[in-house]
Length: 143
Image 1: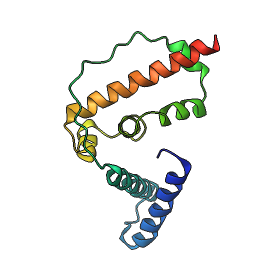
Image 2: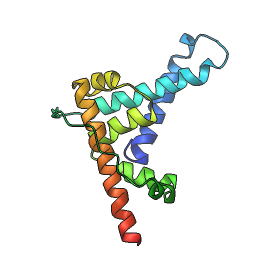
Image 3: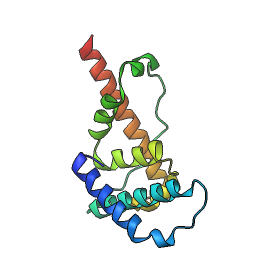
C-alpha cells in the first residue's frame, strides 16, 4: 500500500477476515502462515481494485534496456528503495509490487487490473525504468 494508513487499514481488514473465517482453515503443518498470507494479499488486492476508478490502456512496449550500473544499487538500503517504489504512480507501483514482491504472474496481475497480459508487462517495464531513472538521479545528486 502507498502509506502506513492504508497498510494499517488492510492489516485490520485482513485480521477481521482471518478471525471470521478461522473455522474454514484446514489444519495442516505450516499451512496457517500461508493461509493468513493469502487472505492478507487478497484483502490488499480488493482495496486496490476499489481504487481503480478509470481504466488506463497501456500500449505495447519493447523490453527495457539493461545498461544500468549494478554497483549503484548496493548503496541503497531497504527504506530508500521502498521510498522510491512508493513514489511511483499507483498502477506502476501496484504492478511492480505484485510481480516483484508478491510473486504474481502477469496473467494474474492482468485479471486484477483488468487489462491485457501484455499491458501488465508494459507497466512493469515502465516501472523498472522509472525506478532506474530515479536511482540514477539520486546517485548523480550524491556525487
